[in-house]
Structures are given as C-alpha cells and as structure tokens.
Image (tube, rainbow, N blue to C red; front, side, top):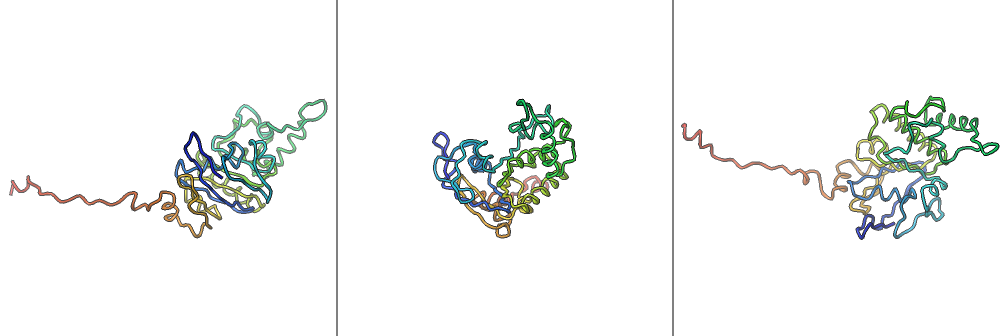
Length: 254
C-alpha cells in the first residue's frame, strides 16, 4: 500500500504479511508510517495505492466498523472508553443487544459481558462503572471490546504507555493467550525489549518504507536500531576526544 498527505509521501509500496497465531512487532521512529499503516488496516484511513487481502479475499474496509465486521480490531493508546458508563455499556456501546419493544436486553448484555471479561481475566461485575478501574484494567476492557467482533487480527498501538510493570505483564499474558487462540497480533511499540520478548516476527519501517521483516531471532536490538535509524548507534553518538591544551597557569607558577 501507499499513502500521501498533502503531497508528502507517508507510505511507499509497503508490503507486509501478518500471520494467524503469531505476534508481529512493528517498529520505527516517530513519523516512520506505523500509525498510518495501521489506520489503513483498521479502516480509519484509505490507501492511495495498492491492495490488501484478508484470508485470501480482497480487503478494503471503508471505515472502522467495516473493518471490525471482517474481524480486524485496532486498540489505540487513547482508549475509546467512557468512565461514566459501566463496563458492559462500554464494551457494547455500538452493539447493544436489543430485546422486545426495542429495549436493551440487559440480561443478554450482562451475560455476554461476563463471558468477555472472563476471556481477558477481569473479575468485575458487568455493571461496575469504568471510572473505578485502573488504567491497566481499562486497557483489558478495551481488548474485551475488540474481542466481541470475533477478532482475526488485533492491533495494539503503544498499549503500555500508561501501564505499571504489573499491568504490562498482565497484558502480555493476555496477548500470548490470544496468539495461542490463533489470532494474529500486530504490536507497535518503541520499547524494543518488550517487542523482543513478545513478538515472533519484527517489521521495521523507516521513512515510510519497509526496510526489514524477519523472525525476531534474526533481528537483535542493535541491528533493529540500525535499520530504524539508517545508521548504527555508534554513529549516532560518536565518541569525541578533546585536544590537549597547555595549562598556562601552571606553567607560569612553575
């Protein structure tokens, strides 16, 4: 796919494979094109050129709702949740179960929410106000919200920004369970140690181009950084030795 904004190329002929049951770590500097690429996959932005396939069939979502209908969920760092609503209402805000007389089927709502919360290992009643949850717990609610679409691909964009180490570990455990369930995961992060520990494969973007895509074992951190920057870390921060100068004060005293 390719994409430009106001004549500036943001993505140039990016070709990428995302495999079921594997975690793909997508890395690159700010402005490399990661978020634009994921917004194209998630249906928020239309590509200018190229094409996509999902499960061997053409895939060209017209919006995020269309992408979700095909099983593609995008989890942003800014959670699309409402603290004044309950967990159940947040998860099903766009897909409330409707019963007789066009009213919300509260029993079905709570039953389905309980099932989704169990999948993400959250032990809260469905009618708990979201505002009572920690940032990490809200992140898991966002994942539960994505799982209701019968997800085939889940995209995590910088998900640990506001999480504690304990909450991050809990999220990683969930991602590994989702991978075992056969869901394809795209994980975007600037924390390379997290990417190395979580991802099966790594793709590197630089200036809107895909410069590498390989199993994680073939891309150690030093090489990944070099690919991201276009040069080695030693070239980014070269050592300089200041020239020696004569100490005239000591000479005068001598």
